[in-house]
Image (cartoon, rainbow, N blue to C red; front, side):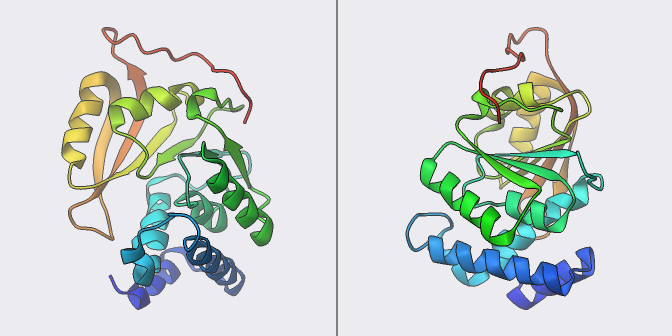
Length: 223
């Protein structure tokens, strides 16, 4: 997918208004600028930022129900704001970005302020220490952790109906099998529009297998 194709894809799928394009452009400018100071995206992807990062993030919305005010989208290890900032710009979800690294959390807060995103906020700390009310409608995690560690770190933020959207690379079938072996869930691998060998794992109705004693109670700290 070229950069021109990426922009056309966004327009076609989301009917992006002029005001929303301005927000996306402003975010990309801030992302590329901050990447000169901290390692937010790989240097090799700077010239493909719309395809490799913006579209790659936006496609998650195609696998989620339409968000409405009060619906919570939790993004684990938000880092550069991908997909969280894109979700906040393109949807009505309330977006919580969980990021434990202070400099990256400060960048996310700066983006939220600059773009005037009233539906986004940041929790600086580990996912295990975050707490949300109500539970998440969606939980996403891009380049965060192997699935056997990812789900236990955030299961306390979810309820039975929560949808987990987890972009994975070439090893996605193996991670899907691991999820199904460790958790009772409805699970599928949805093809990625940006990388033919990648997929988005979509899980729902997640609950632990009885033989695995994963703690699912609420943890301390309020997001």
